[in-house]
Length: 454
Image (cartoon, rainbow, N blue to C red; front, top):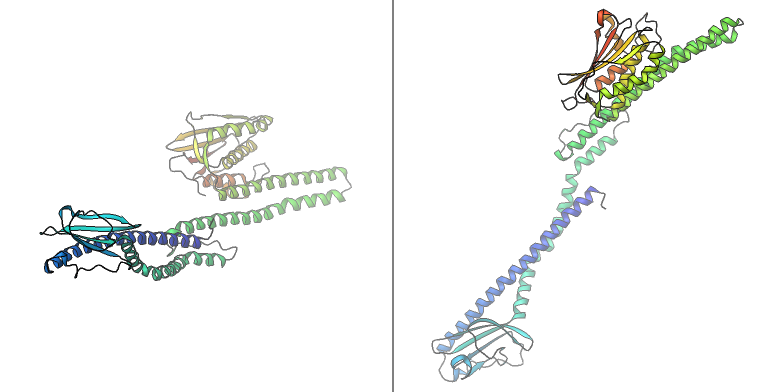
């Protein structure tokens, strides 16, 4: 298998030209032979007519044997003639070549065989009843045709090498844009994710350049996410780790058992907070990675709601919270996206709702289709969020003061990120009676023009 594009082009072009030239040469040879056969037949006919005219001008009597003398019988005859008198040429006087290939006279053209040689014979007669025949050996015709064909095909010996050189130069020139692109990519630094740009590139390689630009954009997104992940992790882990260290040092030095126990409780609380923070940071990193990977397909949001509510039910039941599904549309609420990311979105919304809803409260989830969009609502009976802070809660690491709950401020940021990747949005609505909070996620219905952003 030829792996080099240059060699493949040379092989295809060279092979095609060679086949074309060979076919041309073959049909030219056949045409030349046919034309020479016609020309020699005409020559035979003219020779016979000339012989008739010559006989009319010669002295009469015995067919003028002294003037139409026999050729040398030992010579290699290529052409022969015969002149006879008598009806049908079966009797009467006769002069001509001693090795004439046929005995019986026939008018017009025909082939005859004599002593292993094939002859082309033409017969005619004049007004006095004389029969004239002229014959030409077939091998003479063939040799003559071959000679003419070889001379016609002589230019091939010059044209083929010249054409091969032109093909080589053309392939080199035609593949130059690929070499330029290769050089441009090789000169790039590892952190340079700027688009290559199609510029004046040929149309055939523009899709390749556009695909490379899209790949660079996804890699840049992934690298940016990793950098932000590392920076956020370093910033947010610093505080709980410092608190853990401080509580551990206090517990080590404290003699009072109650104070030592309180310090150890602080260590455990800080470790728990760090664990939740690391878990959310890992989820955030996974969101960015899955967004760069771009694994999408049709997802039934109603089925995901049932699955995620079932997972959150034990935690809600332990807190005495009534968690359920309401107002779910009968039609399949399908969206185009990544099922794992949408599952993370639902889990974060349910976790926030259950966390901030007091005991004996209520949390409900609904899914409906409205104007080619899927509306996902998560309602809770918690303290709600002030109208002036509803935009800020989607910022990373922002927490509403006085909520009474420990968190890392990443849950709603992750929800907004996933919704944006799916071409949707997240907003808050006032709860019933201005109590609690309602989060509304709007996503385009699958097949209605909604496309993920990655």
